[in-house]
Structure formats: C-alpha cells, structure tokens
Length: 555
Image (cartoon, one colour):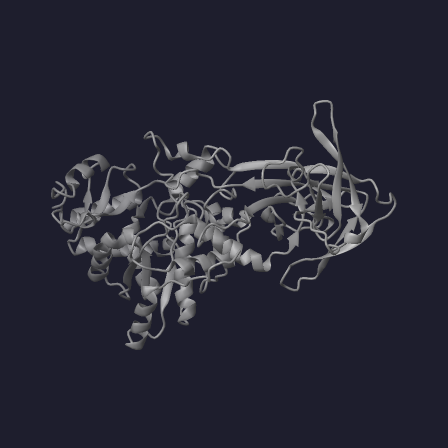
C-alpha cells in the first residue's frame, strides 16, 4: 500500500524567532518547558516539548526544564521523575540543571512585599465563595473587596502573619489591586498568595503560603532570562496579567508571551484530572497503561520517540484551534516502524499442523530476511514435521473470497513449502484441534511452472518456538469526542470495553525467545508489536500490539 509523503506543516513561531534575531532584539534565544508536577505528561505536552526544545536547538539557544510547583497538595516526586524521563525519552536535554519555581519563592515573596508597599496589593479576608460573588461575570463588572482599602502598614502586618502561620487555610489571601471592572476577568484583583499548611516536596515546611501560578510564571521567566515564553491559547487572556506583573515589579528581564493552539486529538482525553481519575478508579492499569494518552503509555505501547516528533512536525504550530485525526498519529508510527522494525512471525491462536509425508527426524533450517528492504540480516526457522498456524487460517466452510487453507486446498507457508490440508482432527466437542497436511518438496521458496497458489500464511515451528503472551490494545474510547456522552453522563461512559484483549499460549518464532524489553517487530499479517517494558523478559516474552498493519489515514 502506497503511503503519502510525510507532510511538514508551518510553524509561525519560527518566523518570530528569526525576526527577533535578525533585528538584534536577542543574541540568543531561551525557551522553557514548564510542566506542573501534578501528573504524567501526555501527547499534548509532546507538542509543547518538541516546540520549545526544537526552537532552541534550531536557533542555537537554550531550553530550560522548569517545574511550576506552586501547589504542593497535588504534586509528587513520582511525577517529577516521570516528566524528566519522558523529556529524555523524546530525545531532548534541558540546559543546565532542572529548575523549580520553588527555587524563586524567596524572591517572589519579596516582590509581593514590593507590590504591597506600592499600594498595588492587599490582604483580603473574603472566602473563596464570596470572592467569586464579588468577581462578577463576563457580562457584569466585579465589586471591590471590602478589604481593598486597607493601609499599606496593615497589609504588610497581615501578610507577615500569613507567612508566620497564624491563620488557617482559606481565611486570607493576598490579591493584586488592578481593576474589578476590567472586561478581562484575570485582571479583577487576582490572587497572588494563598495560605496552605502543606509540606512541599522541595522546600519542606519552610512555607505555609504559596504563590499562584499566574504570579509565579512570568516572574520565573524573567529570572531565567526567557526570551520567548510559549504557551497554549487558553493563556491568551492571561497575557495582560503576565505583562502587568512584569511592568510593576523590579524584574531583571521582560520576556514576551506567545500563544499557539493546543493539540486536540480525537478518541483521546488529555485532561490530567481525567487521566488521574482513570488511574485512581482502576479503569486502566496505571499512568503508563498502553491505552493511556500519556507519553509513558505510548512508550509501553511501542511508539517511538521519532514517530512522535515526526507527528508533531506534521501537525505544525499555528493559532487555529481544531481536532487532529488520531489516524495521523498512527500513520506516523506505522511509517517509522515499517522502515525500522524487523519482521517476525507469531501465531496468536495456534492450531497444530502435522505434515504426514515429512520425515519424522528431519529438520531444515530455513533462512528468512529480517526485513524485506533494509539490510538487517536473516533469522533461522527450523522446519520440521510439526508446526503451528493460526486457527483462523483454516476453514472447513470458507466464506467468499477466502484464500487460506480449506479441506483439500493448498497454501504456501511464508518462506517455506506449499502444503495441502488433508484431514481435520476434532475433539469430542467438535472443535478442530489438529490438521493433517502434506507438503510438496519441490516448492521451497518457489512455484513450479504452471502451478498457482494464491494464499500465503505465517507459521512457526513446534520445535523451538517460544510460548508468549500477546496483549491486543485498541483505542481506550469508542467515541471520537469522548468528552461528550450521548446521554449526558460521564466521559467514562465512552470507554471501549474491548480496548484490551490478553492472549495466552501464543507461539512465536525462535528468534523472539531472547527479545529484550522495548524490542519492536512487525508480526507478519498481525501488526506491529513491542516487548513490554515492564513485564517481558527473555525466555518469557510479553508482546503489546502497538498498531495494526492497516492504515486509513491519508488514503
């Protein structure tokens, strides 16, 4: 099947960076990837990773990895370790050591005091519910907090007591004093600090007040000298606040924020909250379940970092929101594995075949190429009297167009002989448990003149083949838009009950006995598979189906 040439989409940020360098605005660009360590990275993050690290590499700059760790109640070292692993797996390395927003908590606190002294921040006693009421709506202006006009001295005293731990969680907050009538909701006196008596994974019990994401993000960029602060479009309305902080604080730099459209993939959920729900409620087997949209899930599924990087290049970077067909991602992995994955044979539902006219003690070592086009060497299959084919490759009453084995019919065994089905042996329940066949010794690797055999099927030898487990993964959701339930229910209603099928007792050719975790193969006629990262081991392989052979995208 012919495939379309891999398209390369535009990236408007390349032009911006190039123009800034040409104009002398910057001599070196510095970008950053700033995840919150409250979950595992997903395919949407891959787009941001490839963009930020890719621009830095393309233009000879640096890209920082910074954890925006302002909410210790939801953060964990497990997430930090997983994020670092995923970034490295994708093929990127950040400049210097990993950074944390918590590294800047002292400076952020001093800047908060600076705003209080300038009369631009105040301590507010409103509850979160009252604050929402005072905030107004998109069609109604907000109202000033009754605590907005506290004196500078009172605000400094209360903020110091907040830091000292005198007040319970939720009783007070520090807010910027901007404009409660602004049409931009983000400028309606946003929160700078909340009281949270929580142990922080980096700072321990040093702090019981924590800065908001909005107050932390831009100032962290300024501290690190970020030249291009790149984020998704949902932060476009936050940009005026981002700039307000930079303009009203004594920051060392003035980074600029740019927004691009996030990756929306059909049949896929990328909400970290919902991904965590899938894990916590046991709908999947952990964050790295191969059905998850997490990068660690894709890795266990057998996706390659090259295929994900190619996919991100294909979809491009723009400001137009839209939904990308998941088939495009599947095309990318097929395209890469087609060129790089060695071929092998694995029988998923074994049916024993006895070749009655083959000498009992004879074994031939047949050599088959590991790849039809690339020079990957050969693998050896011992051909003897007994072997296994797939149960689906024999039908007593074949459907129309069936080109496999039928009673009295012939097929070619891949890379081997033509065999004829002579007799089907059944158990007491009428199930076929064995085929008695005969072979034509003059057909090894060829069709004699005037003889046509239409069907070619895969097989493995009974002697030397390895028993294995095969996990057939499919899409986790059966709806293109899993966020919407037909009957107004939860996204969980759209879970595909057939997203995982576990097959035991499968038989793989001898060359797969020593497969190492993350070794990838094309199982002929079955799809692309990978030896599971966690559960597979030499001698006892476990294979995950990465993707089927059939490609529907781009046709």
